[in-house]
Picture (cartoon, one colour):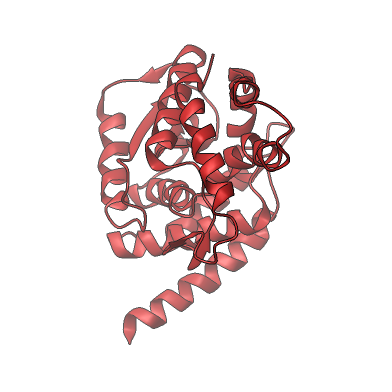
Length: 261
């Protein structure tokens, strides 16, 4: 069952963290968000989660293994990932052969880009805007926080209350089936997370030398292709696209002023 190979170590880690919960020093500073954050899933377990999810995704989608478009994604992705605030794992970039206007990331730094979206983008800068946004989610740990909230907080409560045995704790985490994992992957981020990923994406585009205006262009492409019920994943949550365009333009202006000083 999905995640069995990482859930038992996680249980012991959770119990240890609960024992430390009274310590003021609990939490790790995240340079991407500028905050101390309580992340109880360590990087090696996050990467293991991502590997398991990748196995599931390969069964559901046709992942393109090679070719010029794959190399293009990897080239742009490598350039952006080198300037990410998060460098404790290796980033991977995958192309899914499906006519869909979507891209997403999973725990462990793997980013998936649908061919339908790639075909609509006319420049490397536009492709970079999507990848940088997803890398922003990685750096801010938005993805792992979604999984952590789904599988961890209930277990922490159970440990604190001594309500269930360790074996039952393992069983409960293991019941996060592949269907549930896929639901989490495709669930919407909140308004704050989306705006923060846009902000970080622009930061990484600037550091990697890409045209920041391409993010606005990409939003316009997504908006033009989002008519009907099949709204792209990138647009499937608040804030609405026009709000994100306004925020992105303000951030672009701020970055350019800062670059001139």
